[in-house]
Length: 328
Image (tube, rainbow, N blue to C red; front, top):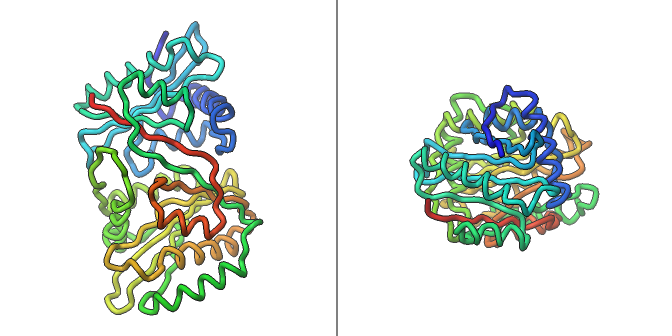
């Protein structure tokens, strides 16, 4: 079997990658957003925030049977590599996943990593694959989806008005698109509050947020041709940023939105800022992007507080994904 890396300019490989990813999703998680070669190119050019993963395609007798990724950071967690393994549903149970994994493990070792993580949807086969290769389950995360047509806006307005009374020292600001350079440092400081989100038993360090990283994230959003809506809460007495939430809307699929980070700095918690920000952003999206039908979000299953907010907003569970980890 031939297993080889490729890059964001390899058009034929990107098309093959998208076809493979969609075949896997139709079998394992049919609610997922379809992948296109354009999205794959942006993913492998920009990553989430400027550190793209390296993709691989696996071929048997010239036919694509699987794929893989290796993702590492030079900003933080220098011990860790995240790996991805996908095998076409028609070509499973032939050892292709194990062969792909071995190539990815070798690359992680070449990069000097001593720990590796891998993810998979909740399924007996995925759990067995992880166990067979020495991985232990460390984290459960839930994919939820909000259907805007089903939102009880009157109830949300009531909840919003109740929450406002707990946040009289704060004002909300709408930041659309790229953040001005002079705001990136304070934005990075606020974004670092996401490090308090539960990681359960994963062996990971806090992420390091800088102005450069925030700009790289926004470049990646633009590279995917998504429109960015950032709602922030400012503490009026100190004029400092206290919290944020971010939603992006796809230009290619304008009925689809995705919830990105929601974070509240520790010193500003207890004022219902998460609820205020999310409801205010929903109103903004309804006004600016009335065609949006659904918004997806992810949370650690142990993140009771944010899950409570999301369920109040009408999010429904779509699927559970497990993260596994092992020493290299």
